Length: 129
Image 1 (spheres, rainbow, N blue to C red):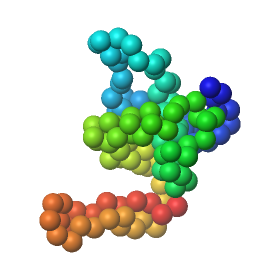
Image 2: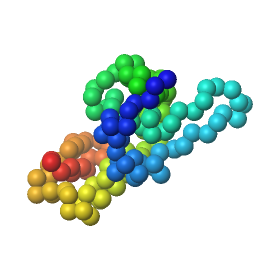
Image 3: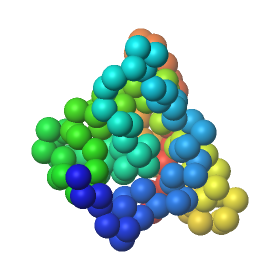
Image 4: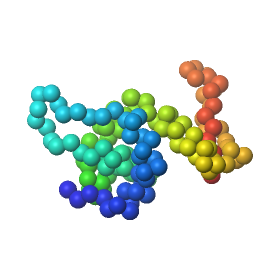
C-alpha cells in the first residue's frame, strides 16, 4: 500500500507534534495468539487520525496514501482516546509554545465550560492564534 509522501505527512503530523505524542500513546504489541496482519507504522496511523479529525473526513473515507486502513486508524484512535493522552498532549504543546514565547496569551479564549455535572466550573483556555 503506498504511503503518504513526506510533505503532507510532515504537515499533518510534524515532529513538533509527534515527539511529545509518542510517549503518551499506548503501544501496540503483537497478539499473543499470533496471526493477524503486519503492524502499521504508528506515525502513519497518528497522521491519518490527525487528518480525519482536522478535515472532517469520515474514517471510512481516509485516502489510501496514509498507508493504514480506515478501520485500523479508527480502532487505534479509539484505544488512544480511552488511554487519555489528548489533554496531556495539548498541555505539552502549549507548554512548549509558551517556553518558546510562541503562545500569545493576550488573545486566549475559553474553549469549553461545563455548566453542570462532572467538571462543572472548569474551563480550558486555548490561545486563539
